[in-house]
Amino acid sequence: MDPLWRALILFLTCIVYLFVGAGIFSVLEGHYEKVTKTDINQTIFDFLSKHKDVEVNELLTVVHKLHDAFHSGVNADEVVEGTYHNRWDVVNAFYFCVTTITTIGFGHLSPSSYAGKIFFILYALIGIPTMAWFLIETGLLFKKKFKILHQKFQNSLSNHISARLVRLTISIIIAAVLTYVFLIVIPAGIFAHVEGWSHMDAQYFAFSAIFTIGFGDLIPTEQHTGWQEWIYKLATTFYYFIAMVFLVTIGCVLQDLRSDFNVVSHHRMMMDNNGGQTRMEEQMGADVEEKELALGHLALQTADTDTNIDIGVEDNYSDGGGDDEDMGDGKYRRI
Image: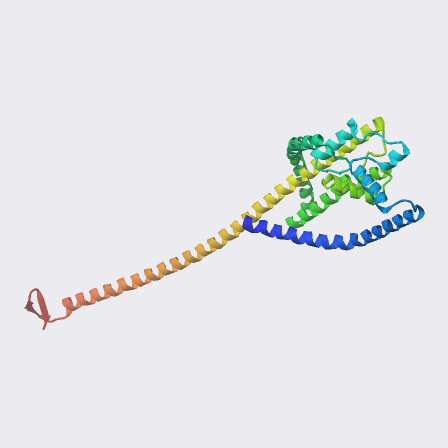
């Protein structure tokens, strides 16, 4: 297929996929949104009923300040309880840099000052390409080892399954299951235990993190302080790096498998075309040979006829028993 048509088909597929996802999410989350809205309205109504001296505008001002504080990384509960600690200390700033260059971007911490926003742009312009370079180089480094394992697995399957496409499908399914288990399920169990999340929430976080979606509704490292926080954030950083390298490696392997599959398909097509051409040439050669044989037989028959005519004429001249009358100009007439 022409690359332009393939790109157009993939683009239209993505558009359709987006609209399908939008419809499903709208149905699933729309109801929850309505319930939340009703609950907030009821909470505000109950608060104003108990505090007659508080105006609605005053309450909304407080709500807006809490909202802005939350997006700036300030936890209002900790401020009220007196347990608040600086969000922009070195360890949290380090974790912010990790989520920046990996493009996870949880959004739980973001620069508020103009100087911080300017430095963020410059920092990301250098850090993101560098991180991408690291992931690609490391993925290519591990690709050979993964291909060796894949080939060994394919060879073991070939003893039981002859169809190459079936073997490839089985390999992809097993690789997908193992990847999900080692990169999502097992880390999710650790996050669920440490953070007190449900296992579903922990899987949701792990998936959104390593695929750099990073909604920011669930954030790790918020339950620790001091050296434990450093260890925990370094461990989660290491997890992000390992998971992303693994995913890039799998992507490189799948790209090579796709190229190999295209080469095999092209080779088979060429073999089929060559086979058809060979059969056509054989048929044409047989037709030519048949025609040559026919012409040969015809030539032999013509030669035999000429010989018989010459012999008959010669016999007539030699044994005819008549006299020849000279007609002039070298012509004779039989008398």
